[in-house]
Length: 370
Image (cartoon, rainbow, N blue to C red):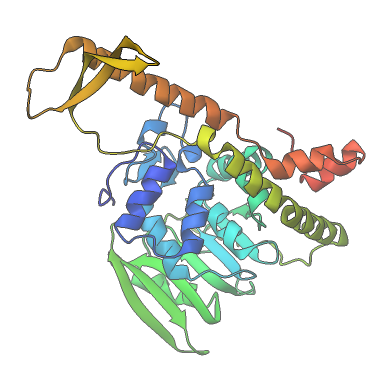
């Protein structure tokens, strides 16, 4: 499923296209999508496909099309502090974006059938925490992933405010997933080729709304010998934050507020130099040099001046001018790339500059080094 949105060159291009096509409609969802680079969840050698509006699968690793994820994120109506369950959590891409919105006082759990995919998701999460500047710009609820069959969740499990299932659900399993939902909660799942939003309005009442026509692979189940009792999946416990965690959250929040002004000033100071080349529709033209003279004091000085002619006026493009223009474009791109690399993570730099023991700095940086 996918292909409804134009392909982009990078993650920001992809998000711009999703916004233009009205798949992303709220600022909160847009910020989460921009903070997590979809390409980071692809295997090496496949990243070129990351910014197309297409699903991707390699072995057990699977990512839905970007337009699907954006519709899911909008339909979940996420808020800080909510609990979220991702059935078929896969690479953890969606769970990580959800964690940016629900924040440190939310609950973020995922169940995935394949052990190798859970390991992959944990590696990607660890990389995000240790290397992504976005981690410093949000208060984050880390996903917790467990291996198990989504259709064998223990009957005494707690309920959630928001649930998403990332595989096709048979009608017979719809009620099973509904009862995992708190009253007032929202469940989003593909059922009978429709991405459906279900809101629990009471103990035994639900409202359903079709969002988008989709085609999902059916929800897989564990292979087991005839007569074997299926393993019951125990969801992660909902725990209270430790005092240490609370201290770190509030210290980081205070430091983020104190450094935000400095970061804005730094960005403004660098704005002219670090701005990446703007994408624009280029006018086909050719440059030609003409001789002219200018007065300097009482003398006439010859000077070369460039002029542009519309492509339509002269179909034959001067070879020398074309090469010159291409070189100018290359220099502009190179300058943009170099300056982007010079951008600073003001939050991290401020913490590292504090007169504190190294162990405390690492604690405040959430045990990450870059």
